[in-house]
Length: 160
Image 1 (cartoon, rainbow, N blue to C red):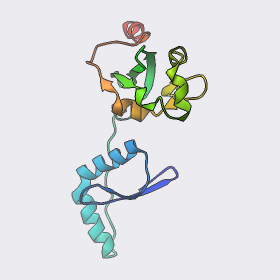
Image 2 (cartoon, rainbow, N blue to C red):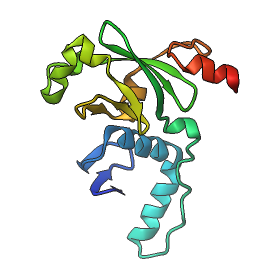
Image 3 (cartoon, helix red, strand yellow):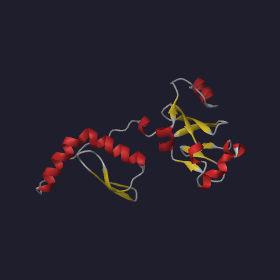
Image 4 (cartoon, rainbow, N blue to C red):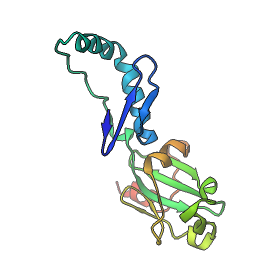
């Protein structure tokens, strides 16, 4: 399997990553696809090993919610971010585990931490720090639907 400049090999039987590297979110997508299509993949593997033509296997169907992007963010005093995603979900992401690493140390300053903005589908700070939107979604704690915790999201929803 290849993705951008990365390649990876997965075990058909259990979806383990055998070698190579992919972003963790993409590994999970491949594993989900394999879970759904394991029998088809195995049948194609047997055909290919005999030199016979293989069948096309449907890609993993992704709805817009499968790859949500950040559309609004609020920095909280406890170094968490309240995020609204394109899917409509609201999640709280804890940045504290990242504050001891490299460029993220600057985020320990609460004033600077509050300077976060939603940009390009993720969150960014003025000096270039950003976080992967897939990580924000996967590791963020989901808030109940309808709970609007990000300034701007409520007024945008009222206008819709």
